[in-house]
Image 1 (cartoon, one colour):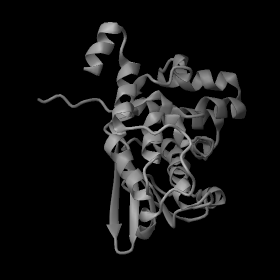
Image 2 (cartoon, helix red, strand yellow; image 1 turned 120 degrees about the horizontal axis):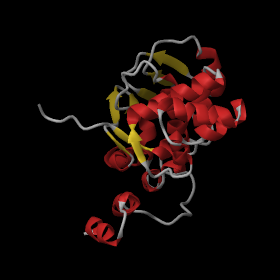
Image 3 (cartoon, helix red, strand yellow; image 1 turned 90 degrees about the horizontal axis):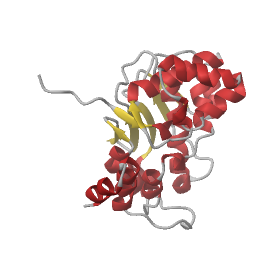
Length: 244
């Protein structure tokens, strides 16, 4: 039988999870959540490491359980800037239009995660931007999926306005009765049992350009991939081989 690669992601994807959990439930709660999943606390400070995607999903679930907060994932995402992902999102966010930015994200997602997918689908005058996580069949995916929503929304705001929200957001799990609570944070229509985390909005917005000038250095896809290779390199020989 052919080997099926294990879906992997980068520890940077946990965002401010440890800080939010510590604030809600204390330092011991952070240790407990990581211990429950079998992940080392070292990842809190060393975000470049890779870990199985399923472990990341379970970490969010464990933290949600320890915090006893049905919207824990959403609270993490609300405090998480797209820049937490490093050059991957910085490079994509420097595209001239919203549509081009989403294309860059989709094309280079592999530097952050293996197995995840970003796609745009159009139906009439509306477009849906969907993130499909690897291993998203986990019954414990709610907190991880929830935390993605504010980050995706915030990624598009430099193009669409600081208070922009999509017309509809789909979530990849059954309705948990938290519509009103989610709407208090992002006021839109919520749907469930979606293929992934899905934001729907007018397709015409894809042509919107950035609303402010770029002040950071301009990046290329070469630099994005080089950053990831350098993080994974362990010695001078490895660095040289990776760059070649």
